[in-house]
Length: 190
Image 1 (cartoon, one colour):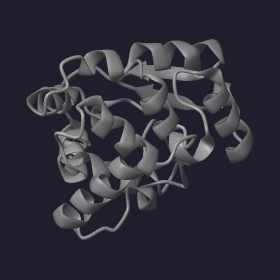
Image 2 (tube, helix red, strand yellow):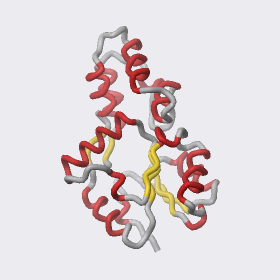
Image 3 (tube, helix red, strand yellow):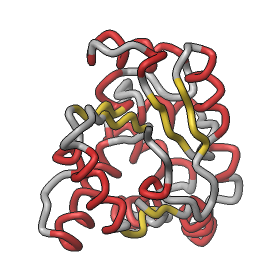
Image 4 (spheres, helix red, strand yellow):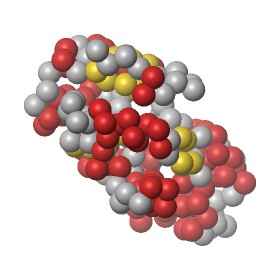
């Protein structure tokens, strides 16, 4: 999926959140955002926190819109490649996310492709909100290894954030840091 975290930062600033970068970035989250993405706090608690942060000057719909602003669209070529690759390889998704984003990106996928869930492209999808841990922590990687019954040295882990790659590499995964503009369908999987 194409994402632009800057759009979320800008959207929250427009709503009056002057220090949003202290609350959340792709690499670091405060306790509320971390709790949302690990399933340790509810959406209601998240919304209450966000409304209190600006003294109720925004609505839940505005917070949802700002939070989802980073979610752009899917690269249909990459989705087609995943479908084809899944015929010969086991594929797993490991994502830091939350229910608000999952609902939004599944809706975008449905609008764009008619497919109801990103999960359909993988043997299993592991979302931080369900697992209870976030990347780059080792716990989430160890959970996936055990649950999927895979071995790190036999697994290629691809991510666009270096701290996640660093953790996976330290656990013995083969890794590839996906650079801006690079696509999964361009990589050599042999």
